[in-house]
Image 1: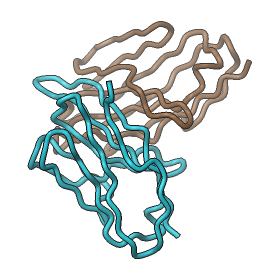
Image 2 (image 1 turned 45 degrees about the vertical axis):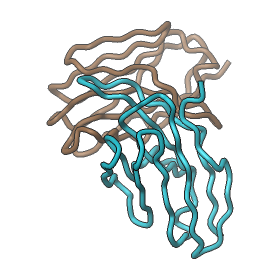
Image 3 (image 1 turned 120 degrees about the vertical axis):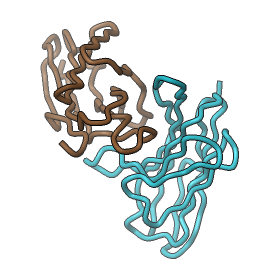
Image 4 (image 1 turned 60 degrees about the vertical axis):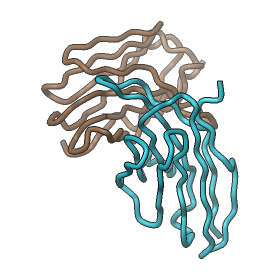
Length: 114
Length: 113
């Protein structure tokens, strides 16, 4: 089972460049999330989606955009990369229908902006 | 409490010790409380999802309790082993938007042989 797949695993960007972090899941989960992990700060929610066509901001959405055109895919777009976006990014998904089940995480994308 | 908060931030114990951590969360609009175990260089993996006040869950030497009225959950590890060393995260589903899964900053556990 593939679960949650993130690509790329590593990336170095120059300031001002753009990129898209890809996330896909094959578990038919309705909920998907993007988090960033900064040292000593735990996981901060960037954006989340409760189903195809529905997205909402988390705690730290500035500088990012998302879309959810299908149940499987939830890409995260960085338009103008800044050094403050250097972080490890995790995509996650979960299934909710009346009660919550656990979230499954991708392997993470380590992004460095120089 | 406005955010999900965990304490302590880090903990060092000896092999064989029992230990516990706390997760505090906003008690209004609560929906579910998750616990995750996160090993270095890996992805977080779920331990428990708890929804009802008074819930108690157990997996091997690890157990958790939930008090939704006062907004806290405890995670217990009995007889800690070096392989228990990890960051333990709690997350709340609920608040003003029940679709959000909001994490605390984690408790870093180090078990010394």
